[in-house]
Image 1 (tube, rainbow, N blue to C red):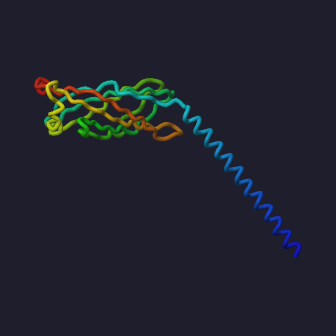
Image 2: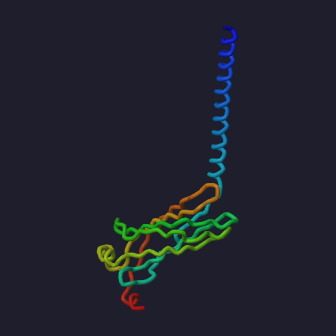
Image 3: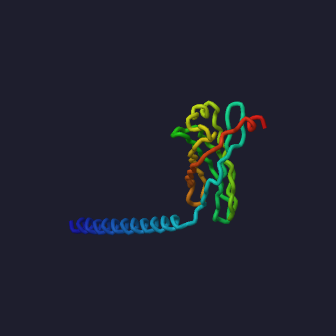
Amino acid sequence: MRVGLGVKVSLGVIGVSLIFAVLKMSQLLDKAKNYVAEKVTNMPKPEASVTDVDFKRVSRDSVEYLAKVSVSNPYSTPIPICEIKYSLKSAGKEIASGTIPDPGSLKASDTTMLDVPVKVPHSILLSLAKDIGADWDIDYQLDLDLVIDLPVIGNFTIPLSQKGEIKLPTLSDMFA
């Protein structure tokens, strides 16, 4: 009987030791996660800005605008761009949206200029007649999500937003 009790007691000691070991491991993992999170937070990341939104061309069914986006890459290696998502709004309505899959890479330790073409159907422009008014432009808000693939971190989204006015094409633009 004593042997049985002794076995139970030693198993109890082993169980308590095992619990303390698991708790220590959990604390160590929490410290490691906090360390990595702090380093990632303080790590330099690519930065972007919309530098221009302007008229590009007129087609039979739409007007195409071109947004120019400047992206600086602080790393010594090129970074793949997964996709660019865009939404163009005017008078509180979305007038164009889309996704550009796999538009290339950011140059290493340099600034890359990206062209984001935005097509607006003529029918939508006609519905904005109040905003167009006498000055022949529309007030807009362009929202862009630039999704890049950062090593170790994975997909990282740089959100951008730009407000301004876009000139509408004139008759001479349509026949040029």
